[in-house]
Amino acid sequence: MVPDDWVDESTLELFNSADTYYALLLPCLMPVIIIHFILIEVGLEFFINN
Image (cartoon, rainbow, N blue to C red):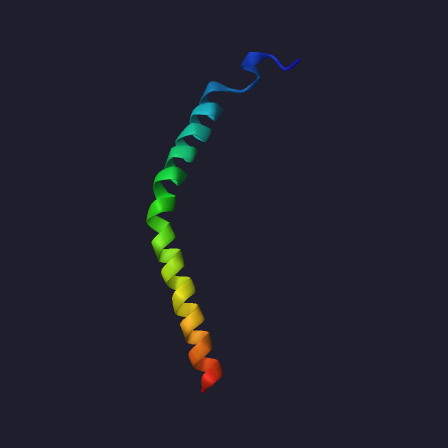
């Protein structure tokens, strides 16, 4: 059995804040990522067609 105090409180806090950080960041980044993918696709199509 792993004791309960095996994980340090500060480490746990860090993980929690990182989770919320990414949870808040992802919705902001998603449109940017999608737009980049669309631009890359269009750019490749254009490049191949010419």
